[in-house]
Length: 289
Ligand SMILES: [Zn+2]
Image (cartoon, rainbow, N blue to C red; front, side, top):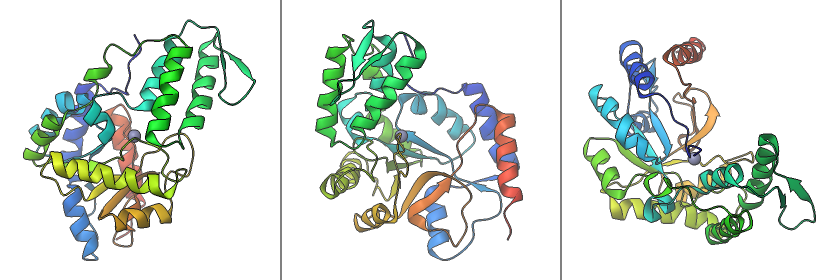
């Protein structure tokens, strides 16, 4: 059975968090927001740890390690997936295209038939399908994926209903001091959807987090599926209007007092402690006070 999410070795993650404590300065997103709002630079070497999507392994494996090192992280969740306990749509399409035994597939809205014989064929088809559904409203996308399951004669992944954190798990993270933020309602590309869907994606997810945790849900992480850009200044303005204080992107970089709080860059986490040290050292070497 194919795994549905990216998984890092917990021992490497433990070593990475030890590195962050020993060599840099862990900071939580709330403290970073306060510093930036008052026009101050974060202390040199400050690192905010964040997780996207809301996978249950964040709670089971990452949170105990974070707590051991007193690191307060931000967990940005897809509220539709938490509420319905279903895998995010891009995990489902990954599962369908890798599991099907059907030899070929017709691209929606086209007469083109694509082979599903090789792994390469399957990846190409998945990317084609994902591009078709990334700009759809949540219900339309879910219906299209339902049809894909049926066309390619695949049943849902057995682990799908245990993939995401529950609201109870998120409340426990919050009790430990971590921040619960929004990663949208259904993980579309926010620059590709209409204004009313955009409003729903950012407002409905904020409301769901506020209702189910004690969080004010002031922090947002832009979903980054398939098509670039994954954010624009118009989307950032909509976040601001909806009451968010910060937004983090998948753009690579460091943050200082000149940064726009609603489009803060991040650094993706490599799998090993050595790679993380190299990546952070290179980034901070380029920072001037
Ligand atoms: Zn995501």
